Length: 124
Image 1 (tube, helix red, strand yellow):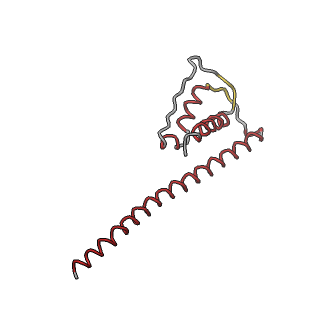
Image 2: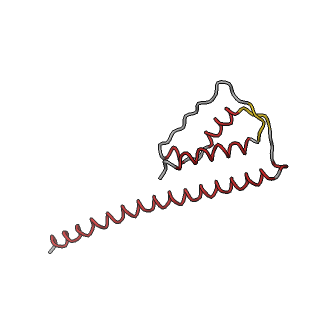
Image 3: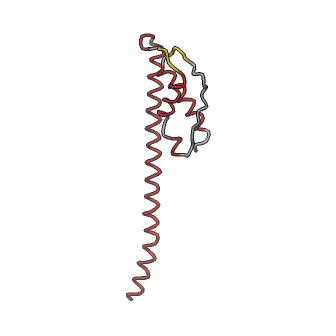
């Protein structure tokens, strides 16, 4: 009777261990999905604030800037999705940096949008 009970316990423990492992994986996937939702909501808020600033002339702070520097800074601020998915960026900036007068926040938003649009094609 003891051997029979041990056999039944062993047979029941195998699917239970599988259920526990699967629930852990599901929890990690769910957490990652919820994290992405939060990141996207934050980005949407940034876009809205950028739009508001763009239409409020008083908030637009144009200043002289070097485009190469802004692009390098923006790549440092780029959203975390690309590294998670092993997507890398290379910058091929001009050896003669372009100087412009613009709102650096708005330009960074444009560059971040370009990065996001480029990576969305490759991220499931």
